[in-house]
Image (spheres, one colour):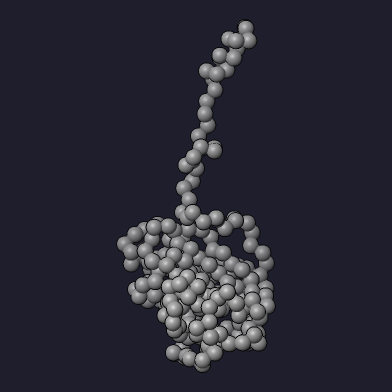
Length: 220
């Protein structure tokens, strides 16, 4: 067989595989943001609180609505403190939720956050008359190992609406700010809210060594 004929036959037998580098191929992304890597989470120290972020899928309504807030508070009341997991603080932004939590171990953290996410998904899917997944990815968690890190996280979560330019004055009602006892101005709107009381030294006492948080203070 001549080289030319052999080359022609090879061209005829070639085929293009599905997917690959073709634009738009593969599983559709729920969000344009980079995904949280699907790797084993590190071991968790029960003495260390965490900053957790959950992000909505693209195209959903804003979380900053009164009915959404009511559903969130119900979800926290039902599952914010169980199986060694405690949800201590939160803030709702348009397309994501910030939490500060405590957990006895890695399993308690995973079960607690996933349980809360399932309750939120059921509640909001019912409210928005939709079905399917609500969150775009697995949750992101960052350990807060020092008093300064805890204070910075509290400021960031409670004042996140100021950070995004949504709210300029006062305590954000779409956060756990109304039940926070660490405001510099000494304002506490109600003594008994849905969030769990801090159990770790860092979240209960340690962060205060760097000063209470001002109501008009903004995250850096």
